[in-house]
Image (cartoon, rainbow, N blue to C red; front, top):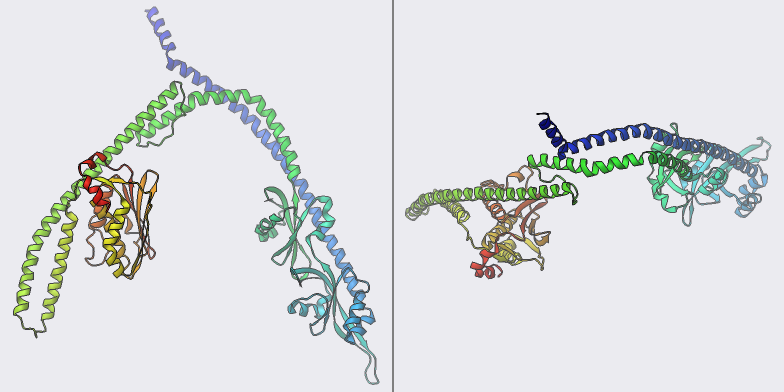
Length: 622
């Protein structure tokens, strides 16, 4: 008994399943160990890397703040110099005398004697420019006002290449009139003199070279210049949300990417009058971040080297055993739910690869068999519906036609025997017209229920399209419909029922015509898409409402008013296309038109059936 038990235990332990279970357990333990090591090491490395990067941005933030302070200090210093220069000009009595004498030449010489490098603007008390760059009238009026001497003005002068921003300080020009016998001397205000220079991003950056900060100049809402090395970055700077940037100044500089490179940026509004001026400062951090990331990479390399062997072993075990097995289990579960698209392990020559290959072949066979079964079942149900409907329609049409003809004969007899002057003959005529409509309706029902030939043949769909359009040409022309075709000359033949497909195309063309009662455009396209051919019938008609789209292929469902349609054309057409293993689909927008697509696979039906009726192939191609 003990011998048998020992033999059984050895046999069980030698089974492949027991070995696999032991290997899987060791793999799990190893993975847990490696995962624990990673959980201790990775957070530490992440914290160190984050601290290094934060240090880089903190240093750059301090330097950017210093740059803003230097910029504003330099701005105030230059404001003071410009104001002094303007005041120096206006206190010169020779300037006031030349101004009062209306001598532009002398005035220009006096104003430019000591200001060769500065721009000088002279405006009289009426707001007219006497000397200097050309400005708009509104700016001239503001500068000529009594309070123009306060602060720095930013104005736009007209230049040959567009507006030129000028930074100017203004000072009033006055002249003291000599006293007379009656009145004391008085001070007369003659106008304003403004002194300034062209404002540019390069000029603002001169004092910031030690910090490596680049600037962009904004005047109003316009970007007028920048010192970034790549001029193609102008569009990216314009795309910055400057309003949000101004709002976030209190929270500190913001991080942005320009040309794929990181920058720290902030915006400083300059104290000016006239147009508002702002400077956007860009502090590049590429070099510092490169050093920080190099340090981080070194730390990560040390940590990864310590665990490389463990992680590599875990990855190999997971790839060789765990992942393929898990993928097969997931594919099996999804196959049981009817999902045939679950991914399978990669092909290999080992046992798991052979199992995956066998499972894939089995799944494809099951899928193909189920598709054939569903297609056959759907086709059978559809044929049964058509057959039952055809019998019912034919019987009802026959039963209805007999009373219709009898009533029509009676009405004709009454018309012959009645008095032509009887005013009630109008109702007799209306009754005859309604009977004719009923007869037409029953005739259309019989046409829809008439069975088609079972013969198939290799058919040229382009020829079928041309034939249908030829038959419908007169009606389309009478309705004012323009017909356009785009037929692929390389379209291959497909094996179909020619009469059935012609009926489908005719239904779609006439339906398109009905959708354009006031005229429009009908376009028919043929093309090859993957392993199928498509015929597209598009119109510019009224379109189909969204709530009608799911029902248009149902029997006796129609969107046409009155009895203009009986709702069988699209139902029968969809069944014919589906019987060819194809698909009939529709896209429509109300008010813009509809497009019906007939998609037929290149191998629709067995071509051997076509050999028995070769004459149909030639007839369909006419």
